[in-house]
Length: 494
Image 1 (cartoon, rainbow, N blue to C red):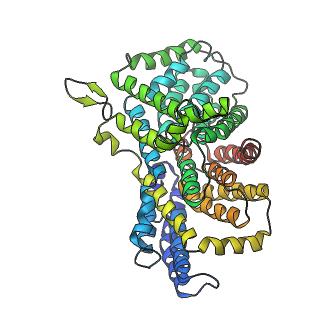
Image 2 (image 1 turned 135 degrees about the vertical axis):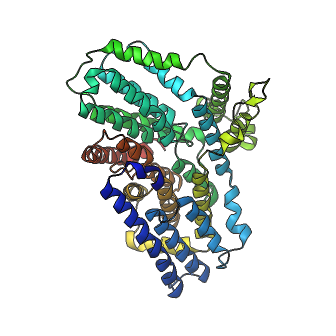
Image 3 (image 1 turned 60 degrees about the horizontal axis):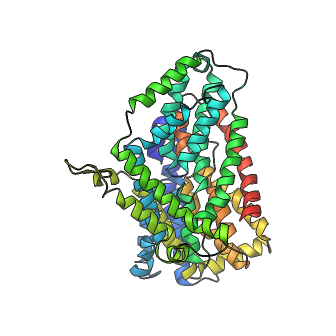
């Protein structure tokens, strides 16, 4: 992520990022060597070696001394020559089913971007009657569409698509173009709504799928697609409402609404009629969402596994649906004469393979934490420190610590560190692991105070329209609101 945001940081911030990387580059191996050299009481030799590998990985993830995906591959690879486990045991998590949900959903998101289906959806909403009636209705429409798109696309891709739409609106209306605080608030709304929207579905942001993967791999519990949305979607709407209140336009009316409407309409007209690629992508996307939702919805309404839901739970799980949906894009033609299809492999190689490796590497390390007995030792040590926490005290601690860590490093790296740790604590305290994993993963998607906290934050800051103090103030408010909302939502809905 560091490379993506280098162009948007000030000289002082870039200097800090460089220092952070250099310090981490040497601190990681030093911690690795020390933990190998000095015995740790009460743990097996394999667990001690794994502790050294984990220290190296965590330091490299936090400092981004080398690309995080490279760290995610390096750490499991080191486990093999160190004798922690054999290569099959170490590398097996790289083929875990949730990884293929990642791949399929990334294919879908890439097709939406390539064929501009996401932009068509956004402009369709913005040209509805009444949307530009007032600055607040415009902000609400932009924020809502950003959050909805981010439930199914990466937060960065959603921000990249919506920021030009928002800046186009700003330049089209003199009342907005000349108001710097209002510009800043709108840009922040887009960035924050993209991160908040990702909480709504398992495919919205990497920590969500990481939580599902760790639960399935390390415990007997599981979260279905529908179960996640039942908690995630209310959180999205609560936090979106908070954002719209906090960043609401104050004391301004449109002075040239007609020019703004004309600008939005011209952008929509420029897209032309709906293309074959857009139709194919829309059909596949709608089918995937319906299949993801169907089992949970049927069981919620009837209380029974009927209408094919039992078969789907066995043979057509979320991962299979996502993978088949993504792969079907390679089969649906956009031009039969020229043998062109909705998605090509040249398109597919541009998906975020680094995040996939990051998730897989974290899952491999998390699996060994339990296999070597390190989990039990960590649980005993943490229990001695924390005492016997209640479920809701443990969840509160997980939310706060995850949120703090996510301010300093990427949400994916935070999830790889925090989710297995708190699953260990829940297991050692004989507490249910599902609500713990859910709360911690949601909190890992926060961290809104700094440009380095999330990709959308970096992109917003890179526009030059958002002062750092404004981002810190609004981000801190959203962090607090998010922590409270997540804790209440998990308690009431999980």
